[in-house]
Length: 78
Image 1 (tube, rainbow, N blue to C red):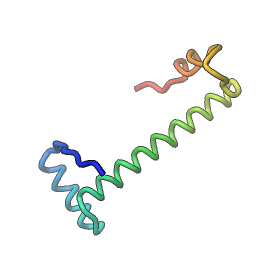
Image 2: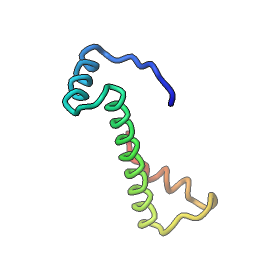
Image 3: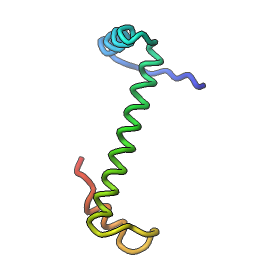
C-alpha cells in the first residue's frame, strides 16, 4: 500500500478528523472511503451517460464512424 502526502486547509482537516472519529475510523480510512465512493459515482455517471447516448443513436461500434462527434455533441457542459 502506498503512502501519500496531501495539503489541506486546517479547517477541512479538522472537519475530516471529526467525521472520521464519529464514524469510528481513521483519517486514512475515511479518506479512502471518500475516494472509493467518488470513483464509484463517476463510473456510474459515465455508464448512465453512455446508455443515454446509445439510446439516442443505437450502440456505438468501434472507433470509426461518427462516434467521436456524437460523444462531443452530447458531452455535458462544465
